[in-house]
Length: 216
Image 1 (tube, rainbow, N blue to C red):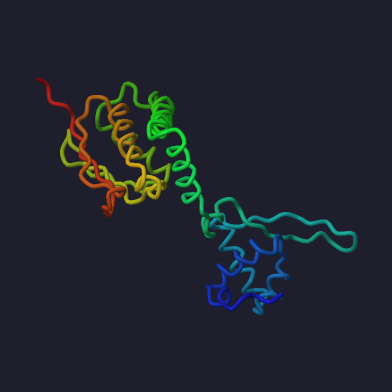
Image 2 (cartoon, rainbow, N blue to C red):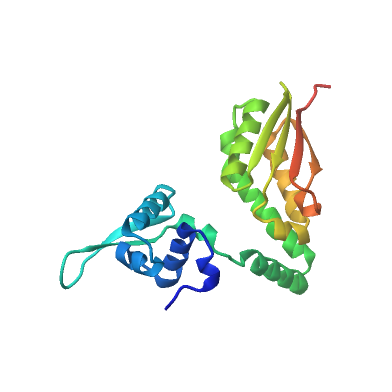
């Protein structure tokens, strides 16, 4: 089966990812035959993809001849292929709202918020405001929010999220953003937090002003 024209227009390393996705495990020879380039060129792309943790190899034992090295996609490579998770999630939440009312969706988001607070709350203990904000930025980065943290002063910070993994959900269900703010307030403790911009409201990013609470 020939590679579709739309795939052939991609860079070679992306074509390799598409081939492994559609055809399964392939050897260097399989890829060379499919791509029509030299075996040395294929090996260079394989080395690059392995270095980036997008493909991995295993030995395939055959009835006749030597075992052959074949390559397959890693879990990390899944990001190269379209997924409709956000559409399904929005549809399921809409169904939940229609059948049980908006309060059911709110309870679901509140439950998720509380679980996140329980999960990360212990890491915030015995830390000052600066350490807590840095820890929060690290947590959000690990969860895919692409955080940029700016220290305005000793007691004031600007936390910017350039990405929102659940933006499609947040656009329809605003309680997601409210729960994030409540989670921040719980984890940061003695802090005044204001959301200055929100992706869910059509902004370019989510930006939070975080200040240590002044003593009265």
